Amino acid sequence: MTPIQGVLFDWGDTLFAPPDAAKVIAEAATARGVAISPERAGRIWDELWARGKTPEELAKGRDLSAEAHRTVWTSLFRTAEVHIPGIGGELYDRVMDPVAWTPYPDTAPTLRALKERGLKIGIVSNVPRDLSDIFARHGLAPWVDAFVHSFQVGAEKPDPRIFLAACERLRTEPTSTLMVGDHAVADGGSVAAGLRFHLLPPHEGHGERGLATVVEVVDASRS
Ligand SMILES: [Mg+2]
Image (cartoon, rainbow, N blue to C red; front, side, top):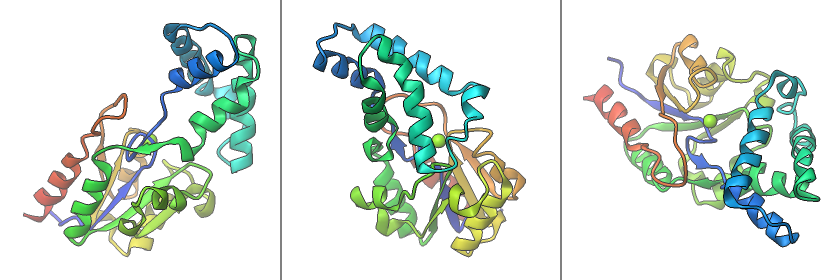
């Protein structure tokens, strides 16, 4: 097996965890004097999230720019204002804005372990925003060699071009580069580009993401 020399990571649900949206909804309701149980807050969020995945919403071009992202998601979230007045914008800021996401407890140790082994590390994301300051804010930037954003490359995952652009930035061959992500289709597009792919299982909450397996995969390729 060719030894792995570079590792590319997806950002959301792979290295960073989303805020607890149901909790944000419940808190926003309380702040507005509206009584909403945690279960109901959870249902409101599940409904919004499910609608966010429909073809109608996806066709609105929300990943084309940071402004489009905010506008499209906020107008969807405003539909929850029948339950909680004025929640649309607040929900966007506290849940969808990458600034509100936090690294998993095993994110930093994994990046460090890979760096100590001399690997190149890249971030490959469809989020329409430069993520480098988000990594800097959590002290993770020194371990990242390249940020590869779809809005800059002009191709979104699963388009093979974004993975090839990332390999070029890392100066690694696709066959010696591992893509790590939580989305079988989007992140799995790396396979068509000739990379190796490690799919993380679905995960809830802010506990360890299971990223130690990435180091095991890398070590196995080099033994
Ligand atoms: Mg993801």
